[in-house]
Length: 148
Image (cartoon, rainbow, N blue to C red; front, side, top):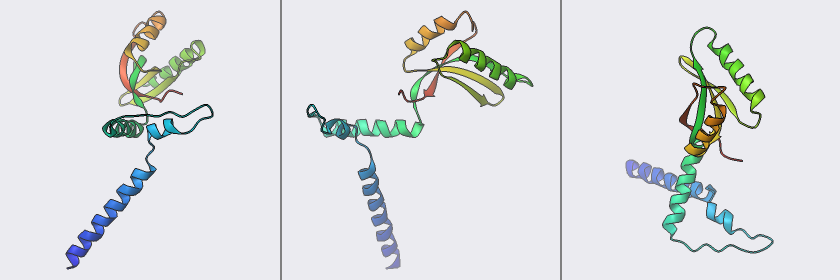
């Protein structure tokens, strides 16, 4: 009897938490349907599409970003690698003020990455711009920040 009671209580708790989480989840299509000054948007679609889009958005939110590309302009290890990475970042930021720049430590290397590119072609275009200053730079896949 106690065992079935515990199971029932656990099952009820799981259903309650799932229901609460489902209500708090933001729905991209509900956001689009909200009334605006100029009119209303009506979306006619299969419910499976709404479900898939919302699953995709929740997975991307867990990543703290989206899949994209960055350009590696420096990586090094050793005693002066942190100092060299900071100097490389400072030099890059002074020349390219509108492009984001990151220093990461991934054992045993300090690495400097630049940009938040959604497509490989966008990263390649920028790589061609900086190729003279950074001849050893290369493109790599990374989790990038959400666009503004």
